[in-house]
Image 1 (tube, rainbow, N blue to C red):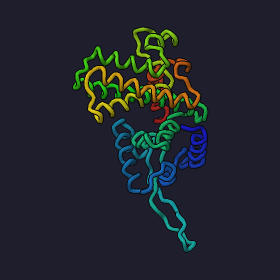
Image 2: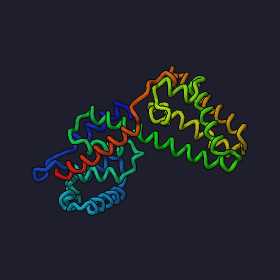
Image 3: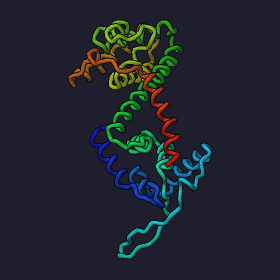
Image 4: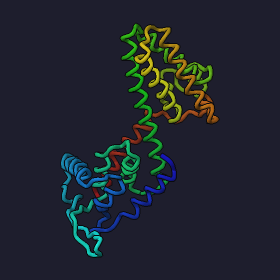
Length: 278
């Protein structure tokens, strides 16, 4: 997520907060607009899911979702009252968790309402960590999909490992998977991808998606055909990166993504306790 968008959304959420009965709240109508829901009825469905989550956790729904009215201006210059809901930070957090995280606004809201300090730099750091964890999970799913496709086409588990290694060698400019582990001080028993930056993880994912698509589209079979296809796709992705001045083998290793994930999950539990107190 671009820094400019983070700053823009941060200010929108900050400006939308207000006090209701001396409690920091957000208007559901305002939140609907910020989260880019075109129809109130559609947003209400997400709110209902959030209320259900609130109940399941054992919280009193009315303590976090208060029905109120809101005056809106009419074209004639007069005003009329429409239904609205005052939402606590915890309610907003649950709404964000029940929204579509592929939307930038929802992804940002999930972190914004989770981070109690509301410091923008903390939000940015957490979003970066979440993006990396999600990218790693996506790569695992993409590799699993590819393995399922090629196992039906005469490739066994050992050959699949070789295919992946050949792909790495193409992506990393001749460095094999083991070469890259040594280069980045990655333990031999751990997957290389667990220590790669988000950009490289996504590059591997894209190349693997291309291979899955082309194996089916071109009706490829056997080790040789599929290996060559995977090498070509990784070379193509490397070329794109190179055109932008990026050599993936020169990007530094990052913290073990499993540790990052555990920290995020631990923070999540702490956040839930804190937000319920608000």
